[in-house]
Length: 57
Image (cartoon, rainbow, N blue to C red; front, side, top):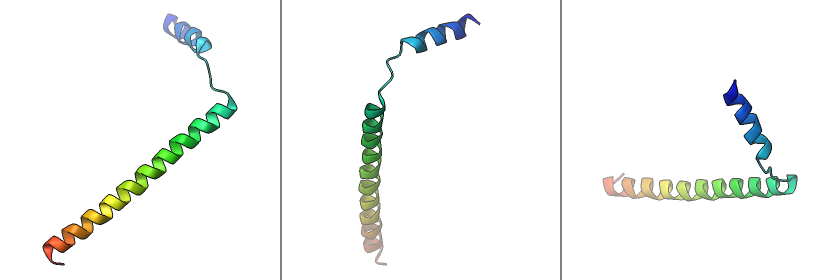
C-alpha cells in the first residue's frame, strides 16, 4: 500500500503540459512518424526495385 501512496505523491509533483503544449508535442510526434514512414517507404521501394533488377526480373 505504501508503494501506491508514493506513486500518487510523485504524480502530484509532475508538471503536466498545457493543452497548447500537448497539441504542439502531438503534432511533432505525428510529423516525425509521417516523415519516417515516407522515408522507409521510399527505401523499401528502391531496395525492392534494385533487388528485382539484380535478379533480372
